[in-house]
Length: 294
Image 1 (cartoon, rainbow, N blue to C red):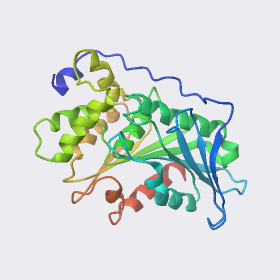
Image 2 (image 1 turned 135 degrees about the vertical axis):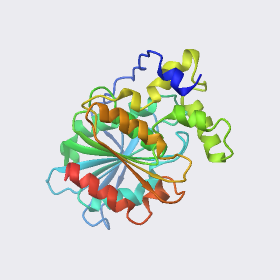
Image 3 (image 1 turned 45 degrees about the vertical axis):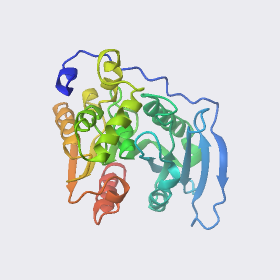
């Protein structure tokens, strides 16, 4: 079934499980000594019972309430780890934000929408215990890389807006797994073929037809656009395997309900974190975040 044909079907989104704290309070699994961190405090906490449901929290313990940034790593939905985001996490913490660097269940642990559910659960815990981490629970953004960009953007269009979420940034975000599935069918680029396989695994191992149409619909970010969704900034390289066209439908659909989306295209082929390290890209992201949360 083509992307357009599937889009024409009237579908009820898959309902994610409730994003509530699994315990009365966060479980600290790996406190880190603040010595040598320039006044920052860091700890790793569990926001759920699965070992992957954890996040590193970086904050300044000076009693001042600070805007928050949630970082979501990439890795084809099936790999990757928050430890690879440490440098970026520390950078934002040193700018004065409270930063939550997330792990989440991978596609080998659970199919979609578990990854979105985990991001929502992490946000819920952070907001519930905002005082502990000097976090302004009503003022935060999500920043996701590649598959993490898909998760972040899916949170951004979940329901009719998420309390306190002021924006979403995606670096090479996979906005449309259906487009990735179609693009990878006869592609010569091995990354496009791999992305097609990864999207099938995320959906629980099935192609976007028949009984699986609902989960694929739930994975499509743009199909869930509503007027209270978060503004978004997406950045792609012009020649990478997750092309800018991935974000164009999102811009169109959110634009129709009055939500601004900026799609920036950088030259070259770099994807995800290497794209973020291109000259001027991190600065563009940081400026966009500052405009939304200060």
